[in-house]
Every structure is written in C-alpha cells, then in structure tokens.
Length: 199
Image (cartoon, rainbow, N blue to C red):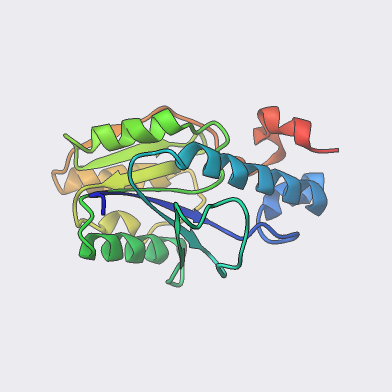
C-alpha cells in the first residue's frame, strides 16, 4: 500500500447521466460523447501515477472499460451532497492510513499527469493543495491533514467555492499551495479542442 492516494469522483458514462448544462445547448448525444472523452482522458492521465487510486462513482460501479480494475479500486460515493461525499471519502482514506490524499473529478480536459504529480509534491511541504478552476471552483483538492471544514456548508457549483475553502484553510492557520488555473467543461464555451468530437 502506498501512503499516497488519488481519488477520482465521476459517474458511469450513460446517455442523460451527467453534463446536463452542456446537453442544454449541444444536445444529449453530443454531451454524452463529450462526457465519455472526459472520462477516458481522466483514466489516461492517472493510470501511471505512482500512488494508490480509487474511482468513486456517484451511482453504481457497473463494468466499464475506462478504469482498469487492476489499477483502480471501485467505490460508491456516500453522502447527501458533494461536500459530504468528499468529506466522507477523505475521512475513510485517512482512517486507512493514507498520508497524502488528492481528489479530482472527470471534468477537466486540460488536466495532466504532471500537474497531479506536482500536487503530491506540494503536499510534501503544505497542508493543502488546490487546483483552481476558472469558474471560481477547483478541479483538484488535496491534503495531508484531517481538517474537513473545507467540505462543510459550501454552495457548490458557484464562483465562491475556492475562496471559501481558502478562507477555511487560512483561518485554521494551515498552509496551502496552488496549481495552474484550468477550465472545467460545464458549458459549450468550455469545450475547446473537445469540440472536434461532436457533430
């Protein structure tokens, strides 16, 4: 067992399961295609990172070909909202002995293996690491502490999420580092080079 853990929050790619804001403008079929490409990209950039890996699904863990069972442990998220689900998995990971824990979603096509590895290096000397998203949230959060206030009482999917998390961390006199600011893919304007995959 490694002392480092990478957690990936995602959904099973199915038509109509996820990317509802994207589907509103490009249609469900195209949104489904984009979602599959995002999940495939996430598997590609994480499979060779030197750490343990958990894929935590929002709904079920039915078979899919994107995350190799020999590399990733498959779990179900537990909790009533995103913050509670994130807090629960961080607590579980800490209880199992992991000392550096990073969590990402599967929405950031700009994210790379090297950026995640940089996040782990930051945790060698900082209590937290954040990957800021251009919309005011974050695409990555990591810690080496048991401080979970960063997940409580947040208005998720708003422009203040990162600001509020940093306020919690700094208010507790904990240190943090930041990665590059990247875009999550939530709207058609976020597609960038992903546009090549749609009709």
